[in-house]
Image (cartoon, rainbow, N blue to C red; front, side):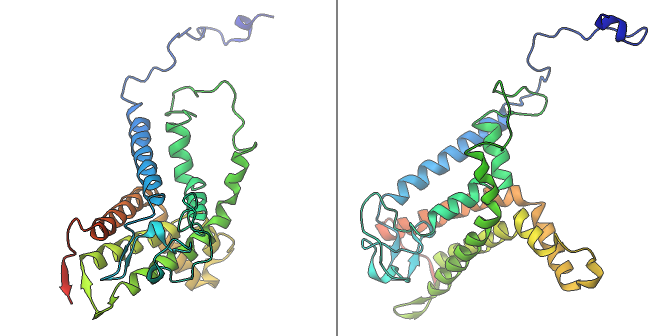
Length: 268
């Protein structure tokens, strides 16, 4: 029996379309912007991490998050709040205890997975556009099996956010006593955004209320789950905002440490 015999009476054969997609809009623009944005940020962050300088402002105790906590022997003693116990080799980042976990948290983030799958891997680049690969196996093979580590990376990211919060608090206590300047505003704003991004994570939302069967019996957790759910809807925006606040904070501290300009002080 031929395929024409199985079609309903009056139905037409499917059109033979040579084009890969019928979309006429600029569907390629979003993946392109993502490649430029993520690529630029990764380049900047990599250069800064391995510069090994201009990360600490002794006058105001400003420490860039790219070097927190500073734990190598190359760290300035005043910036090493948790000790210096790793070799000061160039190849080892000064924040080697936290950067791998932050990278893992971002790489396995549900939004970032969508972003770099579509932009760097073209898998697929957009809705109604064919995948750039001949076969598709999902996340069932190495190295994508590591995406399941996201729930564990969340705990590490929460601890690192606590460390960044501690750095922001210490920055209010300079050698001359309590002080408050533009750098404090930037550090504090970055910490707030990092917390918002971290707790808006899908794993955090599941931890708070994912296993509850009766919200009415757990009113406090329900309130927390509602708040996290509100943030979770904005997880994509927070993912990009925190990339911006991290780069801004690092650049501002670097500029002060390099002597390019002075901090705008409000108190002391």
